[in-house]
Image (cartoon, rainbow, N blue to C red; front, side, top):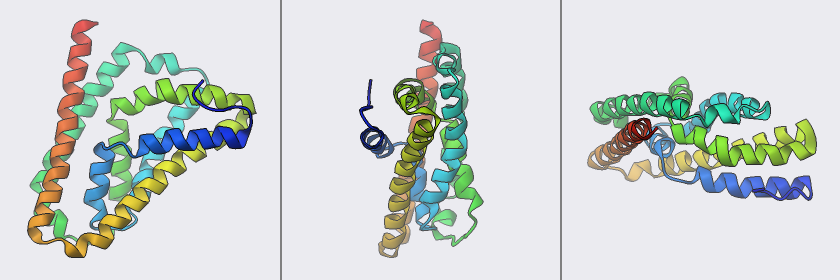
Length: 212
């Protein structure tokens, strides 16, 4: 048991604590939120929306008892390799277009939503988290019935939404202090982070395949 189930409010407070800790962990989504947040203050909220487009179906699958499928080595390997390649491709694009991206004032919302969706789908550790910690939360939430599971999902997503929105807002508000050189460094760092995670995902998946 990973959360307090003596009452729904206490359970949701546990979900909030667990989810916020996970949301604030540095990773690919954080890197892209910083990059896109320099152009749009609400980028974090839109990235969280794209994240939810993957997360909601995953929660439903787990609710109906498919956690064991997500925990299969073959599934982990496939997600890791494909996801790693996607992250490497995104890192390359971000690095190539660092100068143009840093100076652009685009207002297109769909790019942030798609980024959230792609980064979530490409992250094998997202699925591992839900197959372990997330699945335990869902099991606990079932004690409160369907509404409890829904409340758990909404609480978890609001943690992601709040953190990513605050992060992109802070980056946007501080961008006036950024010189062109700082822009290049920030976007280069974000590209390096994505690339690093991409390599890590691929290497980890190959090691798992070899040891399986």
